[in-house]
Image 1 (cartoon, rainbow, N blue to C red):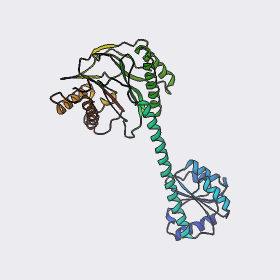
Image 2: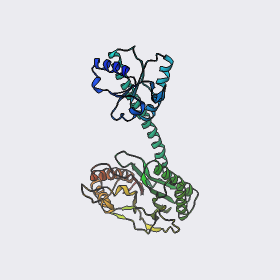
Image 3: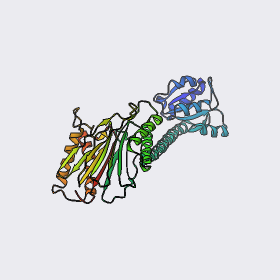
Image 4: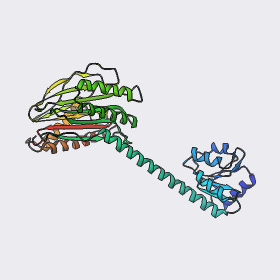
Length: 388
């Protein structure tokens, strides 16, 4: 406890009351508010007089409420004013006691109750802050991870998202999938560098802009140029950039066009093979102002799944050393899953891909020895839905 009292006689009386209550050893004293400000480290309760050389009325209560919000404040004054007591509690004090009207046990009890009330208030404040944060995270997550717009029943879609880091802060990873009227199916997975609300909000802007322009029927190169402009205008930090993987599957589902902007290439899973798709990679939006957006045509075949992911999935460690999983390690993991689950190569594709995403995200965390440092967003698109 810290007693802030300028009158030596009153301070001696309070100290004697506390000594009689068995708590005198835990009390320090300051003779002014400015002196008390320097002694707050480790203090859980302040006994505060309202008339000090450098503080009058409720000024000290208000300062402590603003600058030491976790400290319980018990006003201990000679003013027996009920109205002032109410004002003191509204200003941030946990109790209002009058000198000469309390004995040692009452003072000790008042201090104990004040500390518990302050702890309860802090817990409620933290709970409210956590609820607000959770609601905001939920809104951002809905913007980053929308429901796919898909009408072709031959196709299957499975998605996963997991925030990285020990605090599980939402980042800027996002995905989307849209089938347009001409039968083309367009998918995107993006990753805004960094983690936090600014990056997540920027990811939402990019994802919404992408879906809007896809539904408007604009060419992919035009869409990428628009996303680059959105990023440059909306980012809070000029160092922020985003990587993108966009893949457009033709109406006959036999081939696709792939755009990569600084993003890991997707995997193509076909009967008996898992391979990384090769494509020309351009600079991520935000690093330089890109003007050319090359695409690569990919043959898919009759039965396939595309696994599109952000780099958090392959940047986890393998054991205690510096080695990272990498794309080759991811391919090996997918192959191991396929061999263990369905050696005969039959079964339902949607169920298989859904289980694959669960297994892969769990497997890379296990190899890393715990949660991954970065966020992961994964999208699996398969054809035909009823076959492997």
